[in-house]
Length: 189
Image 1 (cartoon, rainbow, N blue to C red):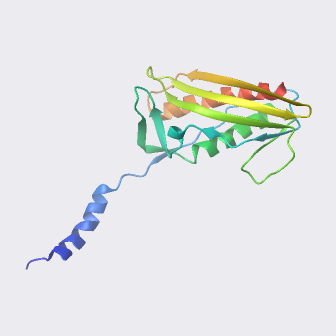
Image 2 (image 1 turned 180 degrees about the horizontal axis):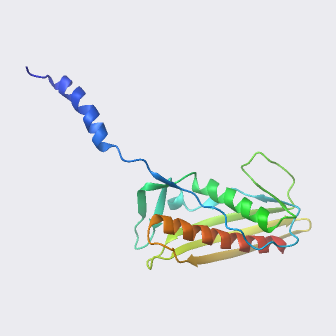
């Protein structure tokens, strides 16, 4: 009995699809590390949506952007949008560090008249050529009572505890905590 071309394709498609499917991705999240509790700060702070470098704006974790090439992990993903996760984590961290301030994210359900607006651009969050995690960012605060502003650039380098993706994420968590420490100090200005 000969099979026609259509019948052969119908039989082969499920086998082909099964062969092309990849295992479930491993999902990662950045937890906020506790930091120093600081006195003062604006009563209400709005964190604008995080500005994220385009090459980082993907579900896959970018391992490195060295040597003119992106090293992207095809099966190691962020558990949520990286910009959304960073915003959530920084709000948590600032709330812990500045307990007399009420911190909320721009994209959230809460809306209030802020005494300060914090903007953060993440320009790099991956491994450098030597395997160190490097976070580069810019931050600006606009205070409105009285009107003034301040800005700062950050370059934070952390050594991953292990050479795998989990080590990179752990180092990223440490770097984001240090960034949050610096943001809290900026808000005290």
